[in-house]
Length: 111
Image (cartoon, rainbow, N blue to C red; front, side, top):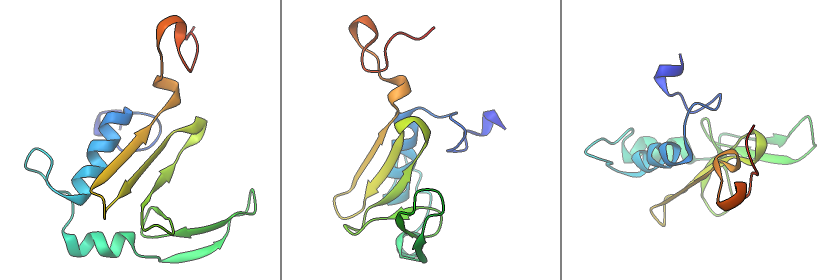
């Protein structure tokens, strides 16, 4: 399963997730994951409701959280996130666990 690079369980880098989201919007290295019509279905609101744990109102499309600005994506554990903004042709992904810089950076030294 780890070799499949399914965008879950922490097996992908932020860069890989951003490339996957970009391939939802259009071709990346010649590959597009879904058609423009399917993209409209995936990013359309499919369900709204109150989340059970924190009581937040959530809106979901088919597998992704859908925001009021028509972006869609998901937030993961530990502050990771990935979203795409179809109208801007932009994808964003971040994984604080991978953020390092001089002296350990944002996430600090890793044991």
